[in-house]
Image (tube, rainbow, N blue to C red; front, side, top):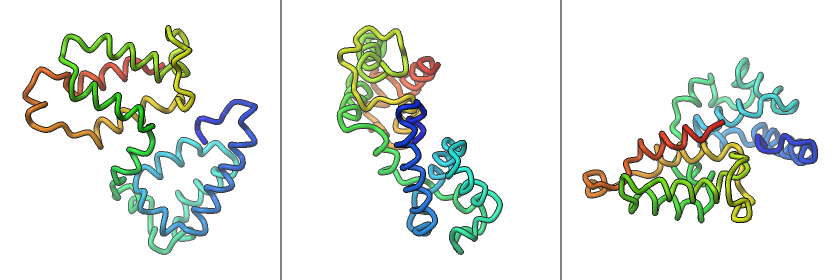
Length: 180
């Protein structure tokens, strides 16, 4: 929903908002398993009219959604399972990320980072050189999703941590520099 702000995508965003709000109202207990990322995602789209009402209800009267939800703190205290964070990136992107994070040596990462940016950040970085290789699923929200993936899902083994493979913090620093 957060990626569908262009005028031609407004009808899709409205349908997504109706679906999400009805799911959260009718099956809130099932949605609580998503944890704190549910709060993050709802906050990102709280400007959408249908979601705005739900957001205010979640902030002011959460028990109206579910008796289990006594306050927003209950949801924020629940860690988001890795599978939900992992689902935010495509399988092909995950393969490329894991290759970089498990095989690329520190000092040689620039070429791989440029290749990755050209492939996946064309929509985010307008001056990217290879628009023809652009992944059509790339969205402006992808960089924060990749950072969350690297922090929460990818945990390299000790032999990688002790090697000259690019550290996660170097990759994350590069991603932060890519943000507009």
